[in-house]
Length: 278
Image 1 (cartoon, rainbow, N blue to C red):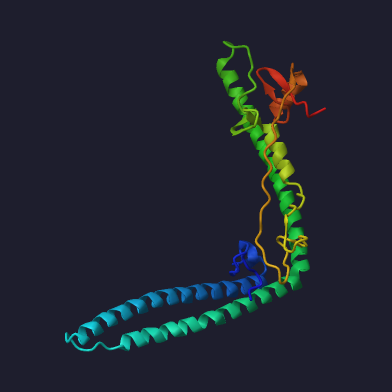
Image 2: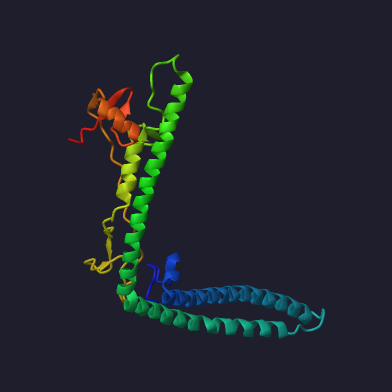
C-alpha cells in the first residue's frame, strides 16, 4: 500500500524540491524513486497500447474466420494474437512489482530524511543566515545605486534649464511607477525598500489547516503513517486598503529625506498622512 495516497485512493506522486542535489544521499534516493516511477509509467502505457492492439487483432481474426466459414479464404492463424497476448500478460505482471518497489523506495526515503533531518536543517539554517546577510547587503547597495542615479537625474534638467527656470525639481524617481498601490498611486521607493528589507528578515512559519481523523489530529505537510491526504493551501488574505486621513505641508527635512529615497510620501506638493501611523 502506498504511503502517500490521494483521496481517490491512487498513489500520490511526491513533488520533490529541485535542491535535493544539495544532499547527495537524498538526491540518489530520489533519482531511484523517479526512475521507478518513469518505468512504471512506461509499462502502464505498454499495457494500454497492447490491450488496444489485441482487441484490433481479435476483431480482424473474427472477420477473417467468418469469411472462412462462408467458404471464402483460408482459416486465419492466431500467431500474432498469441504473441501480443503473451507480451501483454508479461507487462501486466510487472505492474504489481513496480508498486511494491515504489512502496519500499518511499519508506527508504522517509527513513533517510528522519535520520538526517536535524543535520540537514542545521546546515540550511547556517547557509540561510549567510544568504540573508547577502540579501541585506544587496539591498543597501541597491539603495545607494538608485540614490546615485536619482541625484544625476535631478541635476541634469536643472543644469539644462538654468537660468530660464529658477525652480529645482526633486525628480521623477520618488515612486516606482510599475508598482501600483491599493490607493491608486505607485508605491514610493522608500515603501518598496522597506518591504524588501522586511522580506529579508526571518518569516513566521505558515500555519497549515488540519486534515486526517475526525479531530484533525494530523497536520497537512507532516508525514502521518497510515493517514493519507493532500496539501490544501491556505487562501491568501486580501490586501488591506490604505485609507488616508489627510495631508500636511512638507518640511525641509521631509524634502531632504525624500531626495535620499527614505522620506515620507509626497503627492501634489503635500505629505500624505497615514491614519494608521501615530
